Image (cartoon, rainbow, N blue to C red):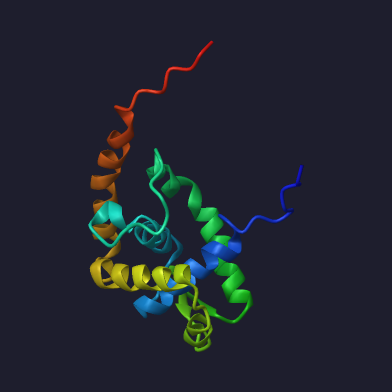
Length: 162
C-alpha cells in the first residue's frame, strides 16, 4: 500500500494564496480579508452565481466554506506577501492587500489548463462583482446563502445496509 504524501496541495496556503493572488491582480484594487473570502467563493463556485462553469466540483453544503476558509485564505495571502507578490497596507480601515509589481509576471508563468481557468474566473468575478461595496457584497451572499443551503437539505441520505 502506498502512503499518502506528507504534504497535500489542496486547501493549502499555496493553493489559496495563488487564487487570492489571481483575484487581487485581476481586480486591480485593494482587498481586505473578508472581501477575499467572498471573491474566493465566487471564483471557485462561479457556476453557483451565474458565471462560467465552477472551477471546482459542486459539493453538498459548500456554502459552509464561507465559514471555514478565512484562516486558510489568510495563510495563503501571507505566503504571497512573504514572496513579494502581494503587498500589505495598513490604514484606519484595517489591513488590505494589493498585487505587487511582480504578481502579473509570476501569474503569466502559470500556463496549465487549471491556471488559465482560474485566471478567467478571477477576471469574471472582478468584472461581475468588483464594483460592489462591502455591504452590497455581504447582502448578495446573505441572500444566496439560504438558497445554497436549501439545495441539499431536501436530499435524503442513501439507505445503508445495517
